Length: 91
Picture 1 (cartoon, one colour):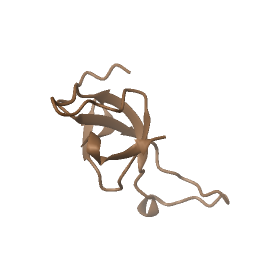
Picture 2 (tube, rainbow, N blue to C red):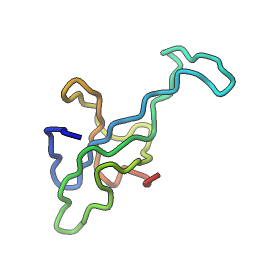
Picture 3 (tube, helix red, strand yellow):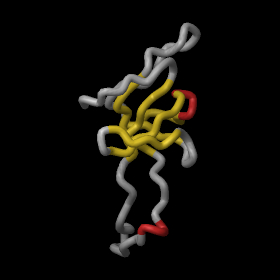
Picture 4 (cartoon, helix red, strand yellow):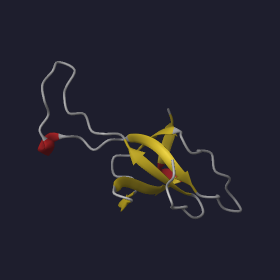
């Protein structure tokens, strides 16, 4: 991926998927009504802690809570950084 950022300990950097712009029936969703995405792709993983080995790895598609993580902008793209415990599972 080429991200020049390495999270520490049990933190994970996730690239959220783009929000849906159109419903299944073809109706376009305005920006003000779009839901915050709850899944994305893992782009960087920390080394874990002495008590906890990391389960997720780079490239995994993961599901996380709506208000999980902290938003950050790196190299012109939007990412979320969160602890691995905030991830619900791997898709």
